[in-house]
Image 1 (cartoon, rainbow, N blue to C red):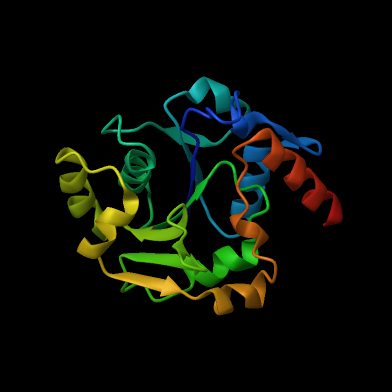
Image 2 (image 1 turned 135 degrees about the horizontal axis):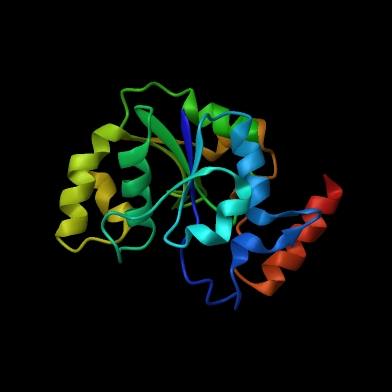
Length: 194
């Protein structure tokens, strides 16, 4: 199972490149890469600014269809993935739990997407995608589509319930993402507890 880390976005609310912010003695993206490396091989960074992440020593790929946000990144990552399925995560989720990732990747391969549901929300940037999605995804992107969730009705999607997720990540810290300076302070406090 390939691990794909999406390192794009404008980080407007943070005011600086959030993937490179420190958490302890490593950056946020290093924390994500370390956790994924426990479950996925290879781990690939999807970025249009590869020079920012060369220090990681990981393979990097760029968007093939530019300008459609995270969905462009998922598409490119899947296209270049050497495995039939890939786990996709944002670079700003440094408390990701490898056991929770394993729970998702071990679901049956018959699904196009395996996505967690937390409360009323799906977590499309913490999900497993099959290469079978590529033709539908590409058509959707080329027709101007941007929202990942708008693509889901066209695919076979398995939702993993919050109850299942809490069995391996009781506080659901895997889904904490860092968008603002306040989020960074909160994640630092959470990190110091672990």
